[in-house]
Image 1 (spheres, rainbow, N blue to C red):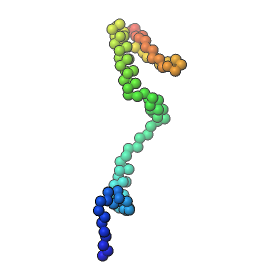
Image 2: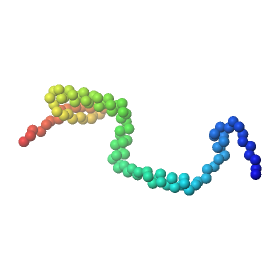
Image 3: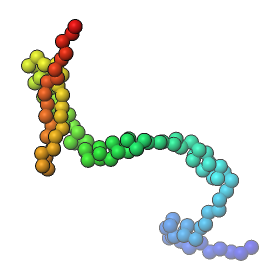
Length: 108
């Protein structure tokens, strides 16, 4: 038998630098099982487009808009209005959200 001299003070990376792993049956089967269990997610083009547009709204911006809309809703509620509508408009490089009370159709 050949004698191997083991060097002292080697790091893990140094000890494993010449090691080449061979593919074995168990790992091959486990890899196939893992890949088979991954759910396939199909997104419609509309969903991809919506996700692209939402990329510009950070959580902080969404929270701020939500808080301001809640304040406006409470003001409408205090005035006796039920619901309100929101219109989004562009004014040059600014985005404007305009609110107005929804008109309730009289019951017949």
